[in-house]
Length: 226
Image (cartoon, rainbow, N blue to C red; front, side, top):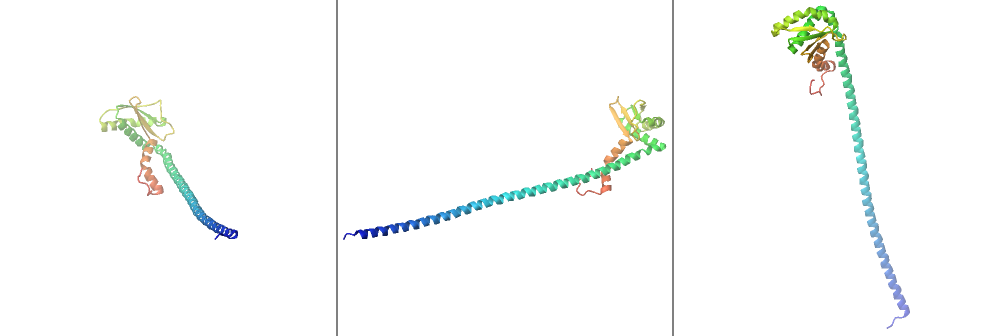
């Protein structure tokens, strides 16, 4: 039985409505899936950027902490250096005071003669030469002449050899020195300074650790005593 035009149009409309509904449902499905994928990708990107930001600020925090440690260490080292400088300046002032007091030895002629004799013998024992030149302060020339015979006799008794000591009358030790002598041998190739200042410097090198301990107490962090 043939369909009328009205039935045909009705069926066409029905088919079009069905197709349109299917298309709408498919479009909604595509939109939903696209929305889901968008949210997933958005969440992934947000998380990725969040991690980058966290890493950035964590790195910044570490840099700030490191800078604080470096600054603290520098300030601590600076403070230690300042303390050490003050201590060394104080030790130097003690040694300078000792140098000033050396001059008092020369005021007692008898005591100074004994000191000079010992200083000369010490220098002679270091050179062990039979002919030497002795230099002293110009103010000590006469005093040296008085004690030389005794020095030569003492040297001969200890060493067993004769010795000739010529006092240098042209080149004297500086008048700024507190006292003492200088022995020259082998045409100037050997020079033994044995002034009061040189003896003080030698003793100071040995006693500086003890001076530090006496002034500031023992440093528990110091491994060596030099």
